[in-house]
Amino acid sequence: MFSFWKKQDSENPPVLSGQAREVFQAGVAALSSGDFETAAGHFQEAAELAPSCGEAFCNLGLALTQIGRYDEAHPALSHALELKGDFPEAAFALGFLYSCQGKREHAIWQYREALRMRPGFREALVELARIYLLEGEYEEAEKSLLEASRTGGADAEIRRLLANVYQKIGRIEAAEAAYLRAIELDGEDFVALYDFGCFLMATGDLERAEEYFRKSLDLKSDFGHARNNLGLVLHYRGRHSLAIDAFKAALLQEPRYGEAHNNLGKVYYHLGRLDDAEKEIRTALEMDDSLASAWHNLAKILLRRGKAKEAASMCERALEVEPRQAEALHDLGMMYLASGQTHKAVAALEKALLTEPSLVPARRKLGELYLETGSIENAREALETLLAAEPDDTAARYNLGTAFYRLGRVEEALKTFQEVLKAAPDHPYASTNIGLCLELLGRPGEARRFYERAIETAPDMAWTKKAREGLGRLNSKDTRDEDPPG
Image (cartoon, rainbow, N blue to C red; front, side, top):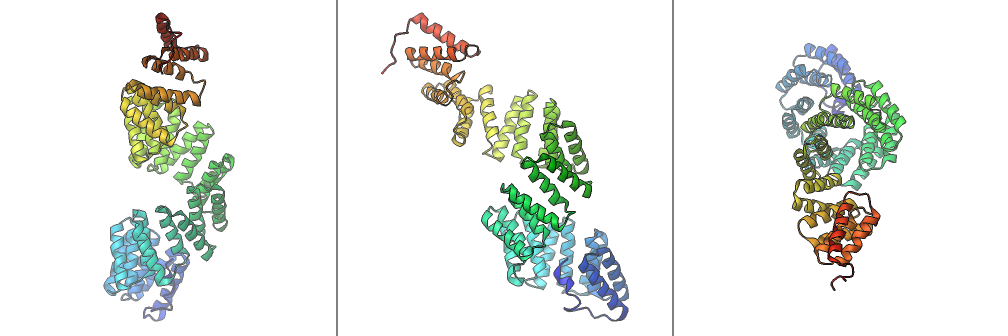
């Protein structure tokens, strides 16, 4: 609960007497302890006993907000401001109500009003920062948090939120330091321990992530989000049975926790238990059809079952929810390809690369599809970009050689196929293609040797027919003793 409400008995208490004062103080105690239902009852009674007491209406509105009775909270808070115009707590509480309702612009305006009435109002600055974090306005979030820390000191909550900001803007060392400082300031803050676990999971430090999720659960054993993320870490570390146990435990605590159903389904999919996987993921979607990852996971199950068109439809649903999912766009491309929709596959893969240019599987497949559909220059560009990042990708280098050959850039094709053969001496097609290039370049003696090598290396490969045909052409010209040009 917001700290300034805990101080109402000692700092600027409302002028009340007798029963009204007793009821009001009981409401403050209930509010401070988190018993919001009881607090609402006390403040309702206090407001009836002292109808001119703005504080009673303000606290009533706050308690009603906390239990989700927003329609009743709004008039109570508005009335508090009417009774006592310069009332920063009521302005703040109205902002908090708007924030709970998702009316962020209204919330920002009210928090700023609270700050106008009381410059440096810590809680208003912190709640503003939360909104800015959600909106991706990280500079504004940092500014609000630093101002709050100057006013009331950088406590654990502010350090944790600053860590969130630093993580979002890629200041990883600063984020880790802020998380650790928050935990040092308040070792009982299970949310800080959980957030640091999430940070460690995002940065790939799975062993420490598991440690901090467990520490968070030691403090709050019914913390479903921590248990769900513990399950994810265990899954990523290959401890699938323990991961399943963690997800099931999270669901015992929160049976309608869609994300946990989805993650349990993901583990079952990994283990090949497709029926169990599909059941869990469909349950997740019944509970929350905005889970993009669940639609994506369902699509992957359907694709594995051979239902490519239905899988593509599910992947499209995932992208309706979150359009900029590079992995889902890549998988959608593969689903289109599996259902014979090559042009749609190309478009999906292109979108995947616009979203995440470093997505290697999408660029590799796109290079192949450009070759298949005759977009040779596009294929060359895609494959050269891929090889700059993945120089040991022999398949991509072979396809690049094919692109050069089809563009008439025979010298470059020859060089590329030679690089393939150096990396993979038994490559079934590289020797044939080197022979073709050498023949076109007027170097028949060398071409003959590579045709013979191709036939010896892969006598049963279909493409080796080209080597036999080339050898036949050379034999008809009797070029076996010709030397390559100097």
